[in-house]
Image 1 (cartoon, one colour):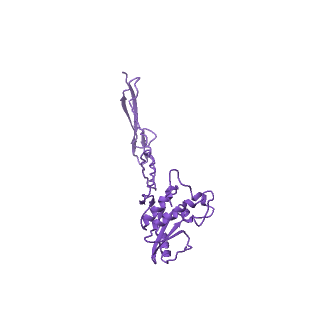
Image 2 (image 1 turned 30 degrees about the vertical axis):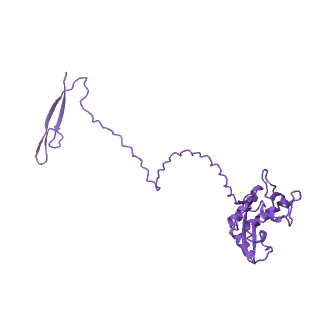
Image 3 (image 1 turned 135 degrees about the vertical axis):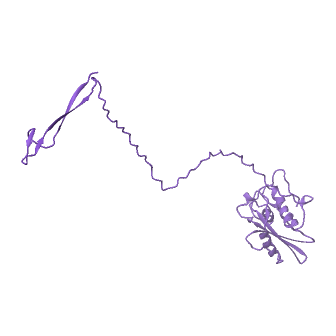
Length: 256
């Protein structure tokens, strides 16, 4: 290692002057001093100066994180459950309509008195022989029939319904009236369908379009009057072929 000496000179001046010895106007002597200050600095040849620069660490500034403003609506979480496939159930088989109770018989004809059930059964006994639907008892029709029968006049009322009349003595009943009306079957001509005075009671009893009946039974002067009302009314001219069917195969009518 080789050292190099650099002389450093410092001139100390106590006052400003042009020459080493100078006298001022007031005979003040100003002296100059030369002083050399020598400082030896050792430098290694080929070495990198030891002066270190301060390293400035540049840390990256953190990026601002964006936070959206809060929403002005309410977030609702909806959970959808998977729907189960619909279960198939076969349609129930239609139940057959109950058949009307069989009426009471006296031999080959219905028998009984004049109660609503007995009168209804007697009508349906004959209607089923011709394939017609059974009728139902209707209290409104029965009230109308009873009011007319209470007048004790054996004549038609002229009301809005179909109407049958009968009168008898000696314990005559409404079921007996139905039997006599239905016995007119033997006088009806299917070759010449239509109304006649001798068969009009029969055609009204089995008229296919009739659905409801109601009857009145009153005793007047030793005789019993029976009045039956029918709705819808039968014996409509021009509609006999479709409403007065023939006797079903295998069926038979009681003797008149």
